[in-house]
Length: 221
Image (cartoon, rainbow, N blue to C red):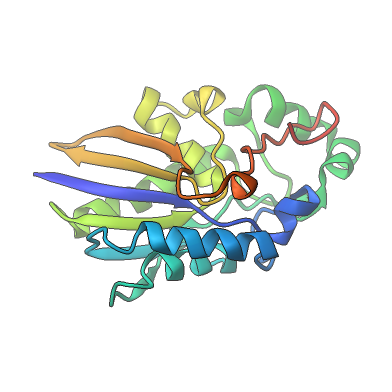
């Protein structure tokens, strides 16, 4: 019995545009993000879905609403899909973080699996709660097709689990773009990626390259 999960990163937010390290700051959707949502809704118009889950943050909820615009499904809020709690680093510009939190910035750049966000979560805690949430969603929807809207940090932790089985796999994780669609399947307890970060629903001008946040350089690359 195969359980299929569409894992969708949220649309562009104003924080994404400004180059902020948002964490759980509830930034509004940007004008370009609104355009992305229109095209994402069309992508999912004829895709069968049995259930929809979302992080509680606005940028993820708006993305879930778009994905099920043509489906009479309730959006189930899943706290485990929330973005990383980055504590005192929340919503700061990248250059501010490098200046104010050099140790955390260095860990994020070089060994994100060992990162402890001041006043927030450790990456080990993130990895645990993200994957516990995914396991709950699978358990509740055996053999069904589910959609989950979430955040880049969450998907990177899930990627680490599927690719390597260990948190350290986050060092090799792909970077996911706004409204990028990934497909994860579970069968007999085994998780496998069938698609990663597909943004083919977007027009060229809306298909912004994924941003990798690094604090040791000049900013997003």
